[in-house]
Length: 273
Image 1 (cartoon, rainbow, N blue to C red):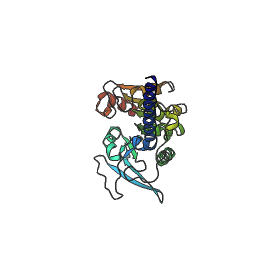
Image 2: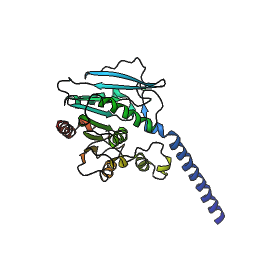
Image 3: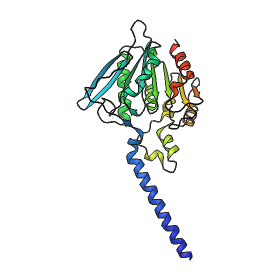
Image 4: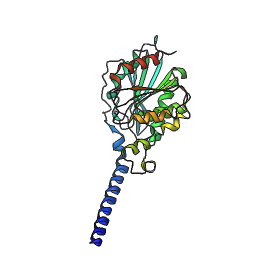
């Protein structure tokens, strides 16, 4: 009887180990699909937005095109530009409605699609995303002074925005629903796996905070079911004095724009000299 019990334990141990390995392999090879949910658009697709805009298709090389939409304001009242790095779904069209949050405050807002999103093409890697962000910043510097550039990141875009702010000067860094790092987020969902060794994308926002000299503002909802509020609280522990965390009590991952407090605080930031 004891031998049968040992056999059963061994059998279930093998089954559990097999499940663990299969799930781990699946997570490793499909993590790109978990992180990014792009929607491509044909090259001749015509955008139609309510806010005045200018479309730029930057041919980086024969295989890479960078799709950028610049939501504009009259030059006579323009105070600067917001470089907006959007989330992981669809393309610029999904995030365009928030452009008025900035243009009503006389800031242009420039959005770029990541490779594979919208009309942007080419290979997508973490370094490529950083390089594309640097290209957008370079374009902005051709028109705006450093102290007229605000870097804004939402969700997956917070890692890109934080990295850019760690190597380029700007007026302010604003992060909406950020994560501590992709590995930290990975551990939240799959704590039984070695996250640091398994993640292909790292986006170590906490490390970039060590090098950021611009003021930092974070918006996060307590009921965020995608990137837990605890990630923002942990991130604040690495931030320099003066950084602030704006907590939306009933905020979720994609509804912060619905809260008056979000608009009040964002408007006040954009009104700062």
